Structures are given as structure tokens and as C-alpha cells.
Length: 222
Length: 222
DNA sequence: ACTAAAAATTTGTTTAGCCTAATAAAATTT
DNA sequence: AAATTTTATTAGGCTAAACAAATTTTTAGT
Figure (spheres, rainbow over the protein chains, first blue to last red):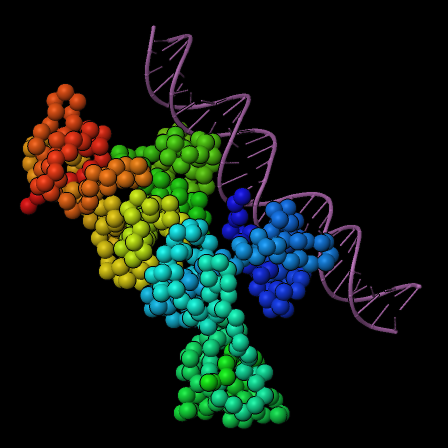
């Protein structure tokens, strides 16, 4: 059974959306908004995916991936993130330039290719945005990272990833001079607007709005 | 104006076929056979490509690429061959394993990507089968190579490319131990069946059928 | 519990890319 | 030059993937 490029994109969308709300059912409208298709189009596709046993679909109730659907989705995510590493590490793209190209490359179909690419890149565990790369069996490195705005204490953290992949957000961080792996020391949390004053790499202090802070993932520094 | 993956494949087919008979018009049936589509399907597509000014099409007479069509086709060929170099040089695929994967990769759309890939690979001039890689302006390194079976003299040659890219043929050459760059000394030309007795790299002698010889491209050794 | 709003589905079209069968044009044979 | 064969096109249908408009189901507000 072959799975079309479009079907792969739907499975990836369902996977991503169910991760956000952690494993819950995903609604037609959520998918519609995410993929920028009309709800009617989504309903059509859901019927076809159910037909192929890639999702469990109950009309008016939402969908969940089957094991098979999940495996497929994770494989696409794996490919996407490996190609992003290739683009940044080997071709010297910036982290805000790789998304669209990886969206295309993720659909190239060859197990042998992806296995060799993985080796060539040194079996990386994370992509350039700090997102974990599933291994060949679909196992994800569990992330114990939290958004900065959920850290209530004035501790010392490490910037390990982002929640938002838009060009503008990534360029904003680059502009500040923030890169994955940098240390972040919360100096102040402003009670009025929940903004954060943070010292980057023990040198320059910056203010982050709560919105920005919610998209910066940090681990506690050991 | 966007050009679909399918349209790109038609343009590439027309380009390739017109090269074989050197720049001549290409017929519906030739394209049909090459792409394994029915002639009616081809006619449909030719109308659409003509609409888009990618080909000059006169019903019942055949087609030629316009300048625009040619540029597009050459770009696809360039991408295909660069990706083949990547697969062989960087990922250690064998030369008989890369065609299908490159058929997919050739449609990835990003000028920046292809430019960086070119640099990453060291701006190669030939792909793993000895085919010339068009430069960014679409210029091809002219090849002065001829098929072995058109060499009538018993001279000394260098194996620079192949005319046939099928797995079985390439594996046959690999089996013999023949690689691009090897020296080929014609020792005998059998008048009866036009087969060739050839010494490879001054060591082992082999017989090549005329058919095999017609698919081996050689230059005169300087 | 009832009604209004929101969410999801059904129905009917569209376009790209394929097909088969029927027909038309061009090339070849006699 | 007419008949036959080959080549190409037209006509009509199919499926995947999208849309808008109409309808149904669920949810939320009183």
C-alpha cells in the first residue's frame, strides 16, 4: 500500500497536533487550520485515511492515529529533522532557512537513503531547533525541557529548543544573539506583564515578553 | 508560473530524447514509450506545455522545447546529476543504486539548495556515470567521447561514461571490474559478430559484445 | 429543556493526470 | 492513386485532492 505525499502531510499534522495536547484526539477544525485546507477537504481525507487503517475516525468526534499511522508519521518527522541537520551542518544554511526545504525532502522515499544519511550526519539526536530526532525504530529522546515562562524560580538554565519555528521568531532570537546551548539565568520575573529579565551566557541581559518566553525551551543547568 | 513534477518529467523526457537524435523534433510515441504513459495522455500534456510556452507543438508533427522549456529541463538534469554525486561520494551508494532516488530528489525546488549542494560537492563536472553536469547557467561540458564500438582502430582509450543506466548493465560492468577512468586497450575486433577483445588497465583481457561496447563511452588516451 | 452557535459532514464542482475506444491524419505499400 | 498501416488526436471516464454551499450533529447559553 502506498501513502501519498498529501496523506503523509495529514498524518504528520495529526501527529503534531496530538502531541501538543499530548496524545488526545484531534479535531477536524484543528487539522483544517494547521494545513490551511477547508474542513470539508479534511473530512474527505479522514475517511480515506480511516479506510487505509492509518487513523481511527469517528464522525463528529475526532481522530487518533493507529499504530501504523503513527509509525508513518514518525518516519516523516525523522526524515524532516535529519534533512534539517544536513542543511545546517553540511550546507551551512541558517536555522531559520531550512523548514520549507525540509518539508519537501521529508517525502523522499528510500529507507536506505535515510539510514545512510543518518550515519553520514553522525546519528544526531536533535535537529537545529533542538527537536528530538526519532531513531530508526521511532523511539524519541524524551525531553525534560519546559518553556521558560513555566520556570517560576530565578534559576540557571540551558536553552535547548524552541516551540515556534517561524522565520521571524528564529531571526528574533538570532538577533538577540541566542543560540541553542546558551546558558540563561533568570534575573527577574515581572509580575505586571509576566515578562522575564534574563542574562545570556553570564554577559548581556535581555527582556523577554511572556510570549517569547513561552517558545523558549530550557533545561535546568547541572 | 509553477511547473509541476509531472510537467518537469515531460520536459526532461523531451530534452533527453531530442539529444539522442541531436536536437531533432520528438514524437508523441517516443515520449509515450519513454515515460510509459499512453499516447493520448502525452497529447493532453503536450497541449498544456504548449499553453505554458514550454514547447513548440504542432499537432501530428512533434515537439521541440522552447528556450524556457530547455532551461527548465536542463535544471532538472543538473539537479539529478548533482544528487547522484552526493549519493555516491557522500553516502557511499554504488553507481547502480542511485537512479531511482535521484529521480525523486531532482524535483526538490530550491535554487539556494542546489547552489550550496554544488559547492559542498566541489562543483563536480561529471556524475558517477560520466554524464556531464550542466553548470548554473545550463552550459554543458561538451563530451568528445564516443561509444567503444565506433572506435575502429586498435588504440588505447579511457573509459569516461556509459550510454545505458540500467542496474543490470552497470552491475555487469562492476562485475567485470570496470570503473570510470580505467584504461581500455582494444586488442582485437572480431569481424564475425563485431565483438571486442579489450585489455583493462593493462592487466586482464575481456570480450565485450557489440551491444555492450555500444554503451561504453571512451576518449582517446593522451 | 430549548434554542442559538459552532463544528463537522454531505453534496456537487473543479483541475491534474491518467486511462480506453473511436476517429482522423500521415506515411507506406501495392 | 488507392488502400492499408502507423501515428496521433479527440471524446468520454476515472481518481485524488482541493473548493463552496447546504445540511446535520454537537455544544453552549439561557
